[in-house]
Image 1 (cartoon, rainbow, N blue to C red):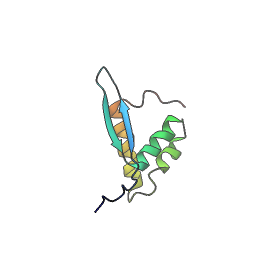
Image 2: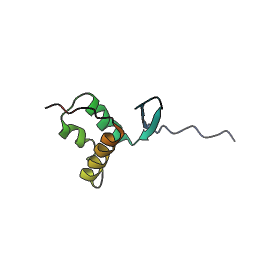
Image 3: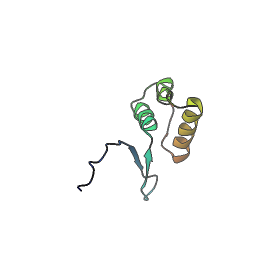
Image 4: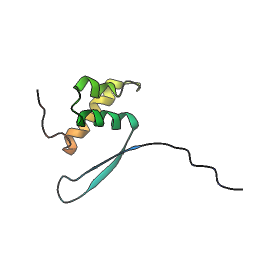
Amino acid sequence: MPPEAPIPNPIGVAVWRPTFEVFHTTLAPDEALALQRAAARAPLADVCAAFEGREAPDEAAFTALASWLDEGWVSAIET
C-alpha cells in the first residue's frame, strides 16, 4: 500500500542571532501572524488581535510579547 499524501500543516519559524550563535524556534500560526504584523509596524492592538482565536487571547498576547522582549526581538518602541 502506498503511503498517504502529506497533510499541509503550515508553521511559522523564527530565526535570530543575538551574538554569533544562531537560534530558531517554531511559532504557532497566530504568533507568526502577530510577529509579521509587528515587523510591519502595525499598531499594538492589531498585533495582539492575532491571538483572538485563543481561549485566553490576552494571556497569549502577553506571553508572546514578553518572550519577544526576553529574546531581544524588540529593540525599540516608537510612539
